Length: 208
Image 1 (cartoon, rainbow, N blue to C red):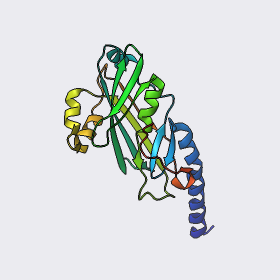
Image 2 (image 1 turned 180 degrees about the vertical axis):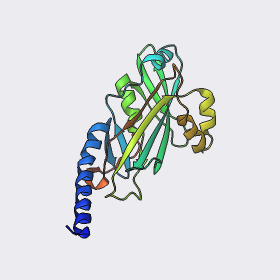
Image 3 (image 1 turned 90 degrees about the horizontal axis):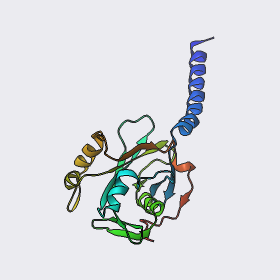
Image 4 (image 1 turned 120 degrees about the vertical axis):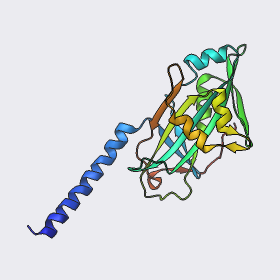
């Protein structure tokens, strides 16, 4: 066999192995599904519950709890995200109605109230989004989702008027959560391509 034929055979075998690896990555890493909503990607994770344990105890003691999320988009084989989308949610609890209120502060403030725990969690997820603008439809990627309950001193460094300090935000999630600090993730979506996804018309941020 000539050197050219051997090279051709190795190349073909490499492509076959790569093709087999993609569904394996998807099967092993898919912790949540993704909605392609207009020009954004949004996580769908009905099994993710964070209004439990210590945060829920604090809410039932009439304290508001702030959750901070990070939705990151990674290209295949990349260790640095192509883009990141931070978000914060202020959750409170009506002890008489036994219902939750969730608010997103800032210039584009919005909120929902009178929610059951699962509805409040779902509303938070619906308001996490990362942009797809400029992303190659044929390039494989995956999303990573992280969530934690934040301390007041951490929030003052990350969320300062009029916007978000991305450096402080990265440092917040780079710090390993200590014992008793509620945190969830990181969770992965599995490999995706925009070209393979069903795209909805896009309704922007959820308000109702």
